[in-house]
Image 1 (cartoon, helix red, strand yellow):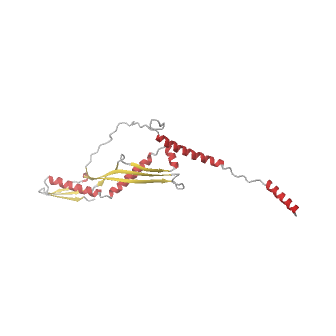
Image 2 (cartoon, helix red, strand yellow; image 1 turned 120 degrees about the vertical axis):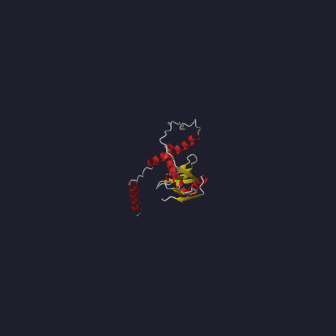
Image 3 (cartoon, helix red, strand yellow; image 1 turned 90 degrees about the vertical axis):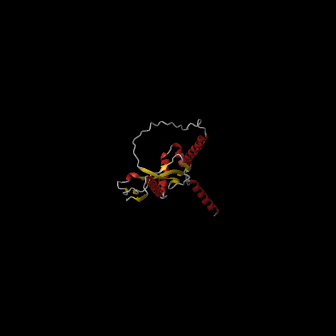
Length: 237
C-alpha cells in the first residue's frame, strides 16, 4: 500500500509540474497611460499656480492688453418722445452649474456664482398721444388727458460692477481652461443676469410708480399753465 501511494504521489506531482500555469494579464501596460495622464494634469495645475504667482515681467505667458479699436461710427439718430418717469436698481446672484452625467463634479463640472448689478427704467411714450388725447373745456379751466400706460426699458447691466464671486471647477475643466478661454461662458452669465433682473422689474411695481409720476408731472404742468382741474385717464388699449 505504501508503495502504491508513493507512485500515485509521483504521478500527481508530475501532472502538476507539467500543467501550464495561467498567465496573468499584464497590468503595467494599462497603468502606464493612466499614470501619464494623471502626472500631466498634475504638472499643468502646478505650473499654472506657479506662473500666476510670478511677477508680470517674469511670467512668459503673461498677457498684455493693447487697444487697436477704430473710431466709433455713428449709424443713426432718432428723436424720443418719452418721459422717463422711474428707475429701479437691482442686484441678482446667478448660480450656474454645469456637470457631466456619469462623472463626479470633482473631475468634470463647473459651478459659477455671478453677482449682477443693473437698472431698469420705466417710461411713458408721449408719441402715442393722439389728436383726441387732450380735451379742454370752453373757458380753458379744465383739461382731460388720456395717457398710455408706462413701459419698461431693457435691462442696463452694469458690467463694471458685475463680477464672478466664486468658481468651482473639476480637474478636466481646469486642464481645459489652462489652454483655452471661453468668452461665451461670461456672456451667458450676463444674459441670465439681465433676464432675471428684467423679470424682477416687471414684478416690482416700477410701472405703477412711473404711471403715478407721469400723472403728477402733467397735473403740475397744466396747472402752471392756468388749468384749475386736470383729469388723467388711462388710454384705451
